[in-house]
Every structure is written in structure tokens, then in C-alpha cells.
Length: 164
Ligand SMILES: CC(C)(COP(=O)(O)OP(=O)(O)OC[C@H]1O[C@@H](n2cnc3c(N)ncnc32)[C@H](O)[C@@H]1OP(=O)(O)O)[C@@H](O)C(=O)NCCC(=O)NCCS
Image (cartoon, rainbow, N blue to C red):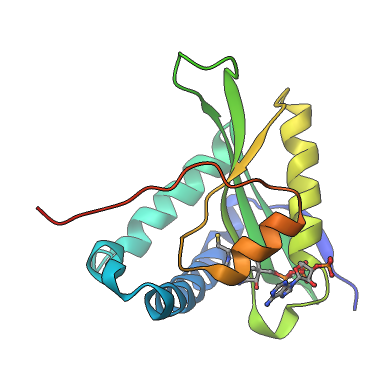
């Protein structure tokens, strides 16, 4: 299967939003299944896609962010969203690369698309002078955690939450 990788432009935002919506539904269900206590804090605003649209736009225009797409027959079947972030000042590492979203449509999984998006992302971070890449993952997303371990990412920080 021929998959073409490239950078997203603003014209791709409507298609990216469709994928982001599928991503959110699946991710929410998956995380809740493994970690039901987290349900309330994962709930999004009714119009969250409007915010997501602004966010995609700002990432596409920013020199510190990029959205990569994987296409099959011209259609976006997966994407990654990368940002370089400033670290808090106490650490030796000043800035680091951060993988925000990483998503591949179900029908296209298991054929190496996310691995390639990750490799492209790591190259982009290196070009930007980053020495470390971080990837956020929900505690309940066991599949993604396993994959990231396989890719050589080491668990660093667990954030816990409590209703007060
Ligand atoms: C997680 C996800 C991005 C993986 O995408 P993918 O394109 O299917 O991944 P790849 O085909 O590149 O496979 C990556 C590696 O993980 C392995 N893998 C795939 N599914 C796995 C599973 N269920 N458990 C463990 N490893 C798995 C593959 O074998 C591969 O390893 P290999 O290169 O040694 O063979 C995709 O399943 C997805 O979009 N899931 C829903 C969204 C999500 O959870 N994203 C992460 C949010 S932080």
C-alpha cells in the first residue's frame, strides 16, 4: 500500500478535524474502559472542535510546531502533531520535542504508519535542535504505552487527579 507522508497545510484542517473527532471518540472509550474513574476529567466542551480548528491552525503556522499527515489515495489516514516546548528553568534540558496527537485510522493500523510518523517527527525535532522527544499518553491507553516502550520511550511522570 502506497502511503505518502507530508506536512499539513491549512486546507487540510477540515479533514484533520474529522480524524481528530474519530480519535477523540475511540480514545475516550478506550481510556475509560481501563480507567473508569477518569471519565469526568476527560469530558470535552460541546464545541471543542472549534478550539481544535484554531489549534491546528496555530500549529501549522508556527515555527515551533508542525502537523504531519499520512495519505492513501489522497485521503488523510493518519496524522501526528508535534510541538517544541520550553522546559521549566531548573532542568538542564532547555527545550524538548513533544508529540501531541498521534492517530491512525483503524483500517490502516499495523502496517507501520505510526512508526513512520514517529520517525519523521524525531527527524523534525532533531532539525529543530532538540535532543529529547516526549510523548504524552493516558495511563489507561495500554496499547499506546506498549508501543512507545517498544520505540524506546521511557516512562517519566504520572499525573494524578482528584475532585475536590
Ligand atoms: C497507537 C497507534 C497510533 C499505532 O498506530 P499503527 O500505525 O497501527 O502502529 P504501527 O503499525 O506503526 O505499529 C507500531 C508498533 O507497535 C506494535 N503494535 C501494534 N499494535 C500493538 C498492540 N496492540 N500491542 C502492542 N504492540 C502493538 C506493532 O507491531 C509495531 O511494532 P513493530 O514495528 O515492532 O512491528 C494506533 O493504534 C492509533 O491510532 N490508536 C488510537 C489512537 C491512540 O491511542 N493514539 C495514541 C495517543 S497517545
